[in-house]
Length: 367
Image 1 (cartoon, rainbow, N blue to C red):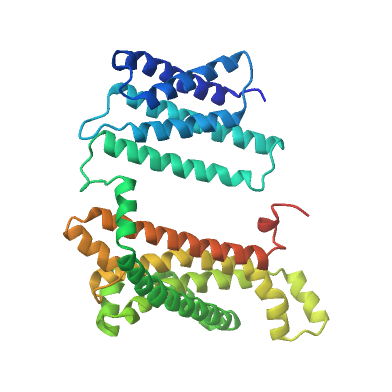
Image 2: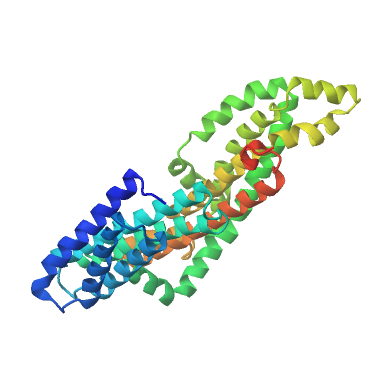
């Protein structure tokens, strides 16, 4: 496939940086043989201007460049200039690979299923590799920003603590608060929908409450419900209730007048109309609220733990870790929270695809 202007630019940048790095590394030839091999391999693709090469070759060059750089990082000293050029070249080839892979998927020469997952994986690995090389190569103090390898080692060494914090924060606080808040918001929305008085009274309050800062609510909940998980679950309920209420009320109005008239001609009761027409039509709105709340709930529980908790929990560990300058443990907790939040969001999104399969946003515009 012919290269686009952006792909051609990335090729020239990556190959040019490798050629310059090869020239600068000649005086210290042999000190970093893997980086030297990478420079040679990254220079060769410049010949594709005359003969096309496979896109997978760009991906392999980028991966080899990252491995060569990490394996050749100097101990206790800053990286020389040609190592920075190697990092720049590997980054350009990773970007070139992703660009060509995306173009191949769009053109239909590669299947979307499976291959599209390679793009976020490569993007995530490229960020981790750059983080590792920059922090170690520039001797960034671990107190400011530890490398991913140090965070991974801390995670492996503190699995017991991380698991206990995950159970306390996610299992005992987030999940009950999320379920109570979302179900209460859904139920109140149905009541509000039946009563113009409630709609006029509660909806403005809902919009007002959803704008309240969590940092003001959390200490009050701790005073009301104590230091254990109940106060964190209460914060989660307060954060998830109103987004669900507002979205569900909007969704219940999504069914058109013609569709409601059709249900009336069938002599359908209010509950039949609600369960067979209006709630299914509100499905995309409800799942939007569920997805928003899945991230809000975790944030709320972690922040609430800053204001009082037993000696366990993600928020407690983050606050005490910063005080003790155990920044690698803080990053390990952040990584666990990010993975848990992403997995929770992903599960809700998968359920949404199964339940609202008929909606154009899920079908992708297909009939």
